[in-house]
Length: 120
Image (tube, rainbow, N blue to C red; front, side, top):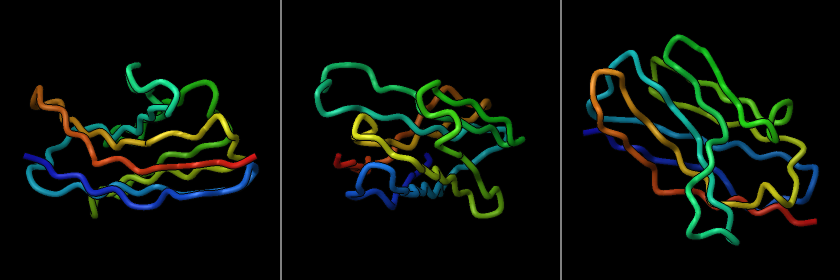
């Protein structure tokens, strides 16, 4: 089992910045992938949208709308992944979820979610 604890998030004005962190504990195995997903408040029934992901080797991938504004990073020694968000827009408002999976298992783990609200 892997436990994920998210921190960060909050309320920010458009154009501002926020950083989310996700700390993993338990059965963390390499190689693995941290991901950040989000679910907008106006789409509670829709699937969570992938925002960014990073592998244990450092490869990253971003959703088109956040490229150049968001940066995902990780500290393998601490099993922590961060999502730095800048130039935030009202449409970035959502609950952001940390996601973790390892290539050695089919299990997928989710954090508790962090609310990010961007006011115009």
